Length: 468
Ligand SMILES: O=C(O)Cc1cc(O)ccc1O
Ligand SMILES: [Fe+2]
Image (tube, rainbow, N blue to C red; front, side, top):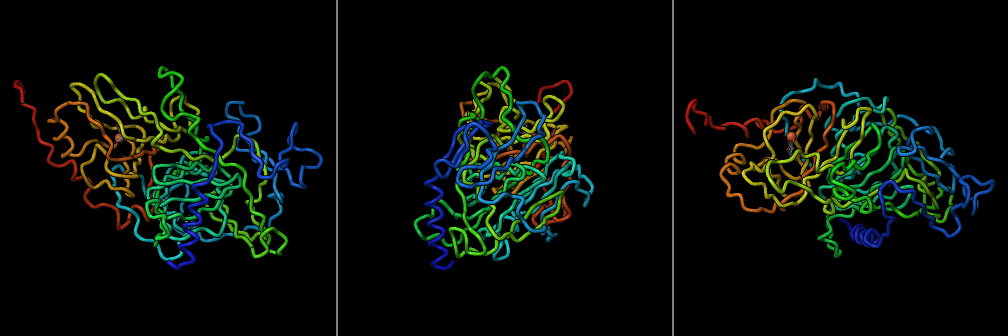
């Protein structure tokens, strides 16, 4: 890495760490980067303050019930409509629903982390689709992507097909969005709503932020949710508080880029800006003569967020048995059937285990829902080894899984004292439909060849008419 690049990584991290936010999930937020930019009393005055253009961004149909209605009003230097033609560009390793490159596989599958990217790979080029379900054009289902990048984006990206839940596993990210800037580190997530334009810049490793940053790489997971936007789960008998608390979700404050290719903006050195749009499964590109991150003020509820998974209020048993992992749901994308999610985002965060006369790790099970799991840090309590940070496992509809042999033997014999599980951070994308792997995932070199073996050697203990 050059001295210049090192300085800029350090400067970027300073910017990221100084950011302020608005607090609360689903709120009607508002923000202005320049005092007086936000109209009052109406959304669309005849002449918008400061000569800005007013524009609505709708994330729900106009007529959806108020509780599900999502839209934001953006006050920007140029209207989004002022852009040249989009033309098709290479999808790279990005794939979309419907997933038809392979047949859905009932086998348990597990992958090691993605290999190193080629030099100059930005977040968008670094996206590698593992699989998914549904149909992007029907706004149903989801996709599982991983990313591995070693270069900051210069271009701007937006996804018309769905919202993006970004789960960093290695390397901090600075997200420059139409709504302002967000900072995420491993252990945090970012949620970019459908259609919102953003750029991802790499911050490197937080523990190496004193100017020695040598190689700002970034690796992680992305859930692309084609369905209803993620919302907080209902709490039912849990009560008014618990799980992910709404106030811990952070939205950006307005910040804009004033860059024009013709030298008329605040940044006269700026050239044309490439804007890439994912639309019905394909990438389309256009060269703008200005940055589309030019929103000076905004208000609404269709906004991006970050959330620190370590703030999740973990609930569990204080008597016996291992509860179902639905109690670890951070966000859910509901379907038309109550309780049946298009996709749930679930976190396995540090917690105490105190169950009496209980097999404490995840049980053996077969599930009508399909489970993709990833690991952000450390280890996961159902697997002794082989499930590693940056890797992932897929247990499709009704495929039998659970603790590996080593975990089963250890937990069956363990002394049941209160035990703190604090050596890892795992998560799950749990979806109503089987996940069909892409060809690149089904044939990947980093697909583990003998995952089934972790359940080999589970001894028979049953003796008819006698105790083992
Ligand atoms: O398979 C897994 O590890 C995820 C999971 C965890 C748990 O605690 C209970 C059920 C379940 O599917
Ligand atoms: Fe499971």
